[in-house]
Image (spheres, rainbow, N blue to C red):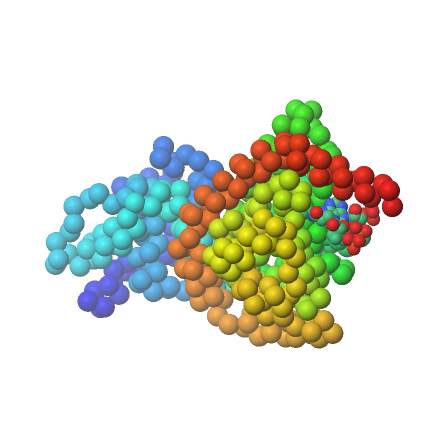
Length: 396
Ligand code: COA
């Protein structure tokens, strides 16, 4: 059987050339005509991924090629409903099995998985992906310092005088930086903070910038931005590490449930004062926190504003490891540089496997949390809390 499968997509141009996929493996699809079922936001990315497929130099092996084939068919034609080939028709039977194994996953999801798979293969070869042609990350951001070194892309929140509070501009920049890091050649991506804080959460001045459409418009726009922000973490395809260099508040804490590793200095604290602010949890924490630490402990944080020390957060599973403040940076970066030498493809694909089991659920949780928050932002409870914050400041 192995020998038969080895010849499955022979010649190797199945992967070397997107056009040969059309000619040999997928005869029913015309690449130059976008099927109606593919109209949507990710079609362009899908088409770019097809082009990148043609840049691969190495044969990724039959299993991966079958997966590519299956995802392509699911993306373009939906679930497999063609008759099962005969047992003796080994090649078509293997392809049919691969396609059928995707079950009823949506075409949009299949396109996403197709793009992720191609990107991880291109990255594994050290090749450049679609955003590589964009300007270098460093210097391209106002609120972040983004660097790539030793196969690690570091996104440093860079508003230390405001404790790295996240403005609307900064949300957008983090989304863009994550998008770029997902597609660059690095093995790991790190988020950390400049100065003595990791991050003080949502910048409360975001609530004071009222657009022409009024406060409702502000809440709707804020909700959409938050949804995209959290989505960027849910869909991030490589290992994502939080290097928590100091106290963390609000959304910077809740999003930690979506990281793969969280390293904290002993000086860090973890605080989600949502009810104090008349708000409600985000960052998928209404799902990830009870799962990570149990409902009773999660409720102390998410409902009753309990601030955890780094050691407590580690005991409850939110933090992977705590380091002495004096050696925090050197110990953590030594560790991360060693991790970044592990095989990038294996790391990325393993992370994607872990995430795939929950991805849809996380998106649903994100949607529900954003919907609730948009309501909360318009409530008297929230308005009064934000006003109190600024009144307290003005009395100082
Ligand atoms: N939004 C807007 N401004 C913020 C901020 C935030 N989330 N966090 C800090 N800042 C600003 C402060 O207003 C202050 O600005 P100023 O120098 O113009 O007065 C500056 O950052 C430094 O903060 P300061 O309060 O002086 O430092 P601190 O060490 O005494 O306290 C915090 C730090 C984070 C505990 C405190 O600023 C705070 O509670 N911020 C609000 C956190 C929050 O509620 N986030 C939203 C969670 S949902």
